[in-house]
Image (cartoon, rainbow, N blue to C red; front, side):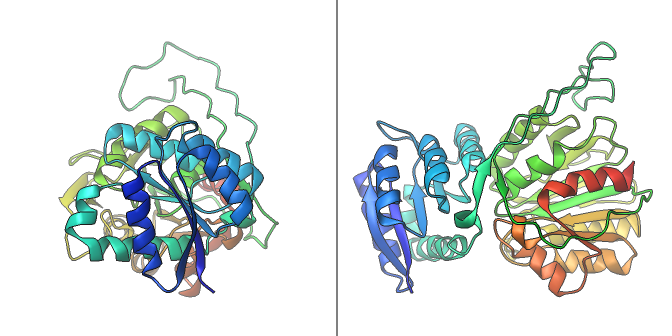
Length: 375
């Protein structure tokens, strides 16, 4: 049965072009279009599409507001279109928080210059997220965590400190799901590095995990999120504001340190050497992912042996599996997010099927278990 899609955009040209691209795929059926957020809600309720493509900036009601209403009234996987700017990144991250599953750059030049590549990417995204867990989930906001009381003059260091007053994590949407079989609580180990890899659904998942870590978290953290170059800086800034630990986009020469999470920059590769220094390399065009979880995990395996806790969260594909295999061979620990709490059970499934997972946990439990394992 074809995947039913609702196309939402105030640009007539973009609506027609997206509809034409999707309709050319026999596995996809465009069942309707809408020109603003209010129409999108009405059409979503009436047509019950499998996937919605959504623009942000529209008259009457913007895309983020529409996504929030749709998630409350008829949860449906939403693919956002966004501009490749810092503001576009901020808006897209807001949309993901509101419940959108994934995003694509809204680039008219690419549509004209590389129509086949755009068609392939768009159709693959639509078919993949149509199988996501978003439709069966309801949204609820967790109770905000109280900010720690100030113990000294706040630090002005860009890296923060255990004495710095970090803001309370803002409530973010989380999916409620039926409880599933979970691994036992982890045993404590003197990890020298926590490495987390993720893709589709990752921005919200990382927020859920990292906001549970205390400011005095004793291990360095590296984050690998599949994301365009224009987005990772804005995402790191967002995480830094939400979390008690410090978060920044990684730069070549950065030094790993406790309580600091370094986010791999989009379009490049991040490696770690034995001295705890970060190397940022150009993105190899032969690799599908830039950044690539396998590359960072592999370098961590070489540099830290059995002292790495690697976590693979929601995402399409199998990136992270081969890097996890190297870590496992060296004696490090590998955790995977469980299927029920994933937006897309691809990357964690690859870990589980390869029998590399030492533990499988729900998203809501991962942050707490990381603390238990490291402190």
